[in-house]
Length: 326
Image (cartoon, rainbow, N blue to C red; front, side, top):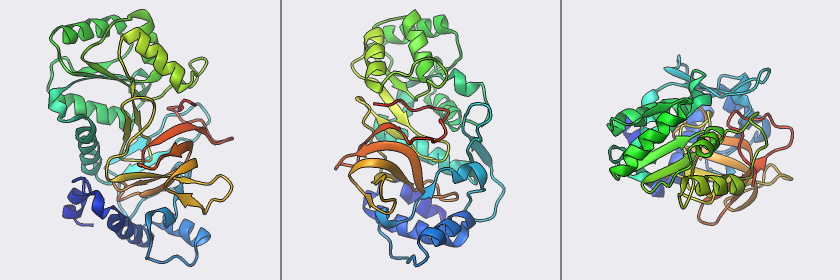
């Protein structure tokens, strides 16, 4: 694809979504060996005339064992998922970091406006302690672009974080506190406060940190301790270059270049745009890997395209972010 087409993908032109899907399907069938092998295995009579829900989705597990790339290149960056010892982690070989940057910048602007209006604080200790996290990369770039002197990362300096938030609140600064779940819980337990100008956004992350709360329980605790009306959330993963966001209640909305569908647990070839089952994702930013991904998340997709995550498939590897169940 030409650069002008890439720019158009992130322009918010949802009308052409189906056309982009068909174009990228043809491109990846021709240039992605792993995807082509999979499609030929499950749909040996595939045609180029595809509508999004009929395009075969590549199981996310292939990112653990194979080089899922469209073309032949050395990656500019390799993102890796977190995982417990002994679990093979996913690897996303990124040909062009500028595509990822365009995606998360356009996504943030779509949901939250100009990042320069925000102070961005990232409480991501579990991610900072390992290399090649796509979430840390995104947070680092948003922190730099915000331009606020108070923007930055925090590890376990909860007292320092509390002092920073109090200064920001005093001057009425619009602030994003992006945090891994266990750290938000620990911080809010030690430094409860009433935040008026801060959006609290959780990214998941309770694996191995004690009993996992349901999302409703988690959000209830954080709202009470931090004095906010809603807890926002980010849905992303190593295998995707785009993110969906929830502005409350755990119901996520995709940007125009991303779409979530649902696959029947009983019939893997029955994919619909509404209902409950296994989530499939189309991410047009995955131009040089694979745009069509079958996740291991169970969820519910609504008529307006928004979705909830209800849990994980049985016997699937526990992801590093360890999504909470409803």
